[in-house]
Amino acid sequence: MDNKGGPFLLVLVLVSSLLLCNNVSSMPTCPSGPFTCRVPLGELFDRAVILSDYIHNLSAEMFNEFDRRYTHGRGFITKAINGCHTSLLPTPEDKEQAQKIHYEDLLNLVLTVLRSWNEPLYHLVTEVRGLQETPGTQESLGMPETLGTQQAPDGILTKAIEIEERNKQLAEGMEKIIEQVQTGARRNEPYPTWLGFPSLQVADEDTRLSAFYNLLHCLRRDSHKIDNYLKLLKCQIIYDSNC
Image 1 (tube, rainbow, N blue to C red):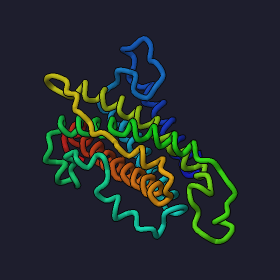
Image 2 (image 1 turned 90 degrees about the vertical axis):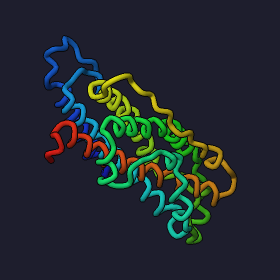
Image 3 (image 1 turned 180 degrees about the vertical axis):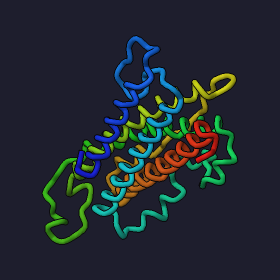
Image 4 (image 1 turned 180 degrees about the horizontal axis):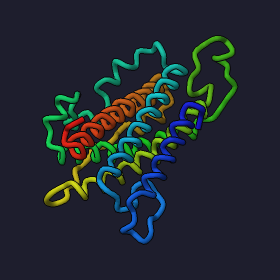
């Protein structure tokens, strides 16, 4: 983890450890992991908000680093705006829209979005890890770097690995929250399929860069939405909207 992510990860570990130790007297044992104990709903939300905030910060840093190093000025943003695989999900765009959705529906929507990122994050880690470093010909001539001439910085791979793991943990946490909150039968909402994997492997440099850019842009967008939804849900459910 680079210096930017290190302090935030330390806070995450410390807070998760403290929460894990509190209010578990009813359980003789408490397995390791951020969401494995039967803990009060308020603490589950505390952990979820901490994780979602952490994931969003990492995804924003990763996107900015990739954009600065490879794609700045190429105009990829115009293609990425409506190109997210989660765009078909009815996700509210702001707080006012989110407040109009029943909290159980919004909880299930958060879990659906998280699950829809399992495959893209796996392939993102695999493809970034597989980039091979070669002599920086373009860089030495003052030309922009490309994925074919320079290995992605270690920080991007480190963040991608971290986000993949934390996304799984957050999804597990959402399942625990839904178990305590949801009335009636448990719903398993279908999540949209990601079809971007072939574009990450094409030989054409612009197409490949655009695919990476789009994926990181969508990850930043969705992680921001999830972070906002969870903070709103915590306010509604734990504090009866008095926050």
